[in-house]
Amino acid sequence: MSLFVEGLHNHLVGPFTFDVPAGGCLAVTGASGTGKTLLLRMIADLDPHEGRVTFAGIDRATLPAPAWRRLTALIPARSGWWADTIGEHFAPEHEVEKHALAADLLLPGSLFDRPIEEASTGERQRLALIRALLAEPRLLLLDEPTASLDPVSTEAVESMIARRRASGTTVVWITHDAAQASRVGDLALRMLPGGVLAA
Image (cartoon, rainbow, N blue to C red; front, top):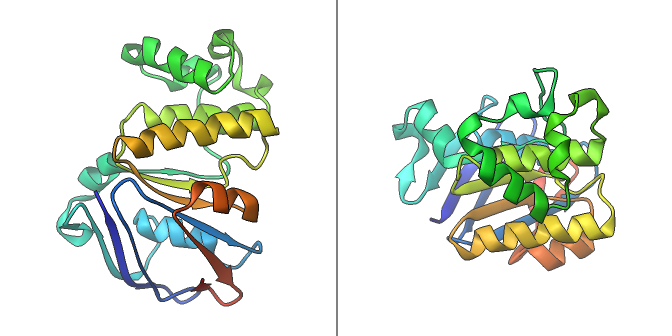
């Protein structure tokens, strides 16, 4: 399921035009404040914008918002948590799957029984990824998903996303790490000041 973005912009950034093939990964680097997160939020249809986004041959403008949300998952740098314990953020029917994903991401199963306040930033990043993956999205929008992780945990996340890509999931991955962009991206672009993408 390929992603095609054409003339996507708002008053702060863009226009952006690019395509990512099914199972491909576009890695975007650049300094803080250049507009990388805004790009993801516009693709996710969370911020006002103009331009066209097509995924799997479907123009996003023709889909109701809930249908687009089922196809797409934005994992922000800081995810929201609304309940007291970690486990309350996961549906009971995903009990087996969440523990399998946690093990793959080097998280102990007992973590789900703990208060969310006790989870480190790195644990929360991986938990947010698990929460998103349980919905089986076909387009992943990742905003620095390994920014707070050690090298071993980073490798676990990269391996998990690679497996999802092998099954056809398409990815746009924001990172400050040029080496990571080279590892994970089929195409790596840099966000320049003023919100312009360049090779």
